[in-house]
Amino acid sequence: MPQDWELALRLLAAAGMGGLIGLEREIRDQPAGFRTHILVAVGSCLFAIVSAYGFDAFLGFRPQEIRFDPSRIAAQIVTGIGFLGAGAIIRYGMTVRGLTTAASLWIVAAIGLAVAVGEWLTAGTATAITLVALWGLRRIRPTLTRGLKPDHEVFLLELEPSTPLESVVRHVDRSGLRVDHLRVEEGGEGERLVSLVLKISPDRSAEDVAALLTETPGIRHVDWTR
Image 1 (spheres, rainbow, N blue to C red):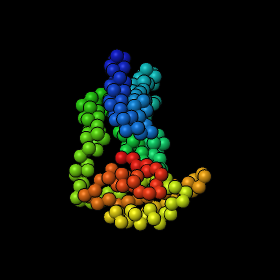
Image 2 (image 1 turned 180 degrees about the vertical axis):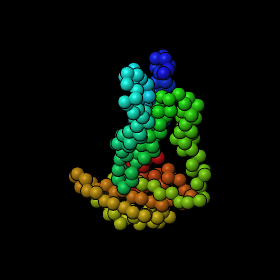
Image 3 (image 1 turned 180 degrees about the horizontal axis):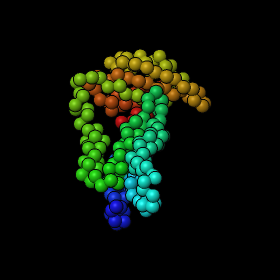
Image 4 (image 1 turned 60 degrees about the vertical axis):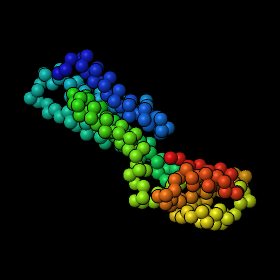
């Protein structure tokens, strides 16, 4: 069994690795951020440590009468983290968001488990790969997919009460954009909220489309999240 100071070091390392991933999520203003990822990493690490080393003294009395499988706790962590990840997934209009954050919680739990059993290199490599996937690939993804497929973006529009929806759709069509789907919700005081799914060609950016919608007569507010 490792010394107590080494086990404490593993908990600190799990907190640091989980915190790095959580910091990226915090910057993106996601539901699960810096503190949540630290707690998940430390919690999974602690569960694994207790499972692997916490019952040595008890098992020493009657080792032949007790069947001990430390991997069972790890299996339960993998299952249990799914419930926490599901809490990070939210439905926003016609889209589902939080899938990447749920996946980051899942990988953070795995990193905590790896640190708990002393797989330092494996845990560090997984942390680096996760940060590259979350931060680095996000920046180069538009470059990789440019010219290969059109993007679908969701814009939430708040219309003036007197604005016909047909005029907004016609204006969008004249701008060369394709409306794939829309949904209208009635708000208070006669306001209307429109969720608009647009297919954007590779030669146009979502920022330009958001600016175009903002300048459209009758649209009071445009909400779009990168």
